[in-house]
Length: 367
Ligand SMILES: Nc1ncnc2c1ncn2[C@@H]1O[C@H](COP(=O)(O)OP(=O)(O)OP(=O)(O)O)[C@@H](O)[C@H]1O
Ligand SMILES: [Mg+2]
Image (cartoon, rainbow, N blue to C red; front, side, top):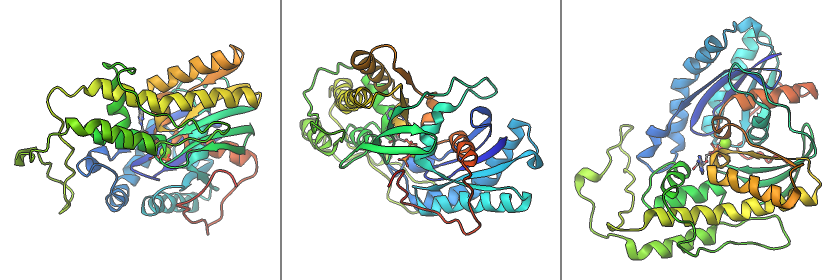
C-alpha cells in the first residue's frame, strides 16, 4: 500500500511516500528555519504563508523522488493536529483536494502519533527495521510536548507522565536564547555542549519523585540567574542587528555575553540537567510497566547525549533484553514519512476521515 503523507503542522512543509507503514520511498522536507531565525522563533503567520508557497512543489518532488504516479497512491494522509491552525489548514486542504481528485481515502493523523511511528521507518529506499515489540514505553520529546506513553498495541496509547510546564524542546530553545546561541536551540546547545564539561555548573533537576512527570521551568530560571553576571549590556552595534527579509518585523536580538563566558560548560551543564530526569524516568517506566521496548520520538530525540543516556539508563535499570529503538535523526524532527507511516497502521484498524475533517490545533494523543 502506497500512502502519500503530508505534514504542515509547524514550520516544515513536508511530503513523503511510504509503502505499508515502513518502507520509505521518498521523504521531502522544505524547512523554514532561515525565515524564522531572525525572529528567534516561529512566527505563525509567516509559517502559514510559506506553506502555501511550498506545498505543491514539495508534494510533486515527493512523488517524483518516489517514482510513483498519482494513480498508484492508495491513500492520502495528513497531520490535522496538534499544531498551528493556519499551518495545518494548508496541509489539510491540499490533502483533501488530492484525495478528492484521485478518489482515494483521506486519513487524518495525530502529529504525536506520527512522531511515535517514526520508529517503524527504514532509510529511504532501504529495507525497514524490525518493528518495535509491544508493550513499549515511548519518551516523546518535541518542541511542544514532553510525554511518557505506554503503548500496548497499534493505536493503543496511555499517557503515564508529562511535563507540568515547558516541553523539553522549548527548554532547549529558551536556554539557547539565554546563551545567545541562536535558533533552533536544541542543535545549537548540542553543538556547544560537545566541547564542555557537564559537571561544571550545578543546575537543578525537578525530580517530582513518585511520578513520571517532568518540569523544566525552574531550570530555565536557574540558567537565567547563572548567565546574569556574564551579560554584556552594551548596546549592540547597528550592523549586528538582523534585518528581516520577510517584512516590517522587529528583528530578534540575541543577548550578548562577555568575552570569556564559559559557554561550552554552561551549555553542557544545561543539557545534562534536561536529559537526566528524562532518561532516568523513561528507564524506570520501562521496568515498572514490563516493557519489551523503549522508543524515543520527537525533535529532541535527535540529541546524541539524550540517546546515549537513555540507552545507558535502560540497560542499567532493565538489563539487555529491553531493546531501545531510536529513529534516525531525520525522522525525529518534523517530517511526512512518519505521517504516512502512522496512517498505514490506522487504515488497517479501519480509520478513515470524511470531507468534513477539520484541523485540530489542540489534539491530545490520549483521553
Ligand atoms: N539535536 C537536538 N538536541 C536537542 N533538541 C533538539 C535537537 N534537534 C532538534 N531539537 C529540538 O526539537 C524541537 C523541534 O522538534 P519537533 O519538530 O518535533 O517539534 P515541533 O513539531 O515544533 O513540536 P510538536 O511536535 O510538539 O508539535 C525544537 O525545540 C528543537 O530545538
Ligand atoms: Mg513535531
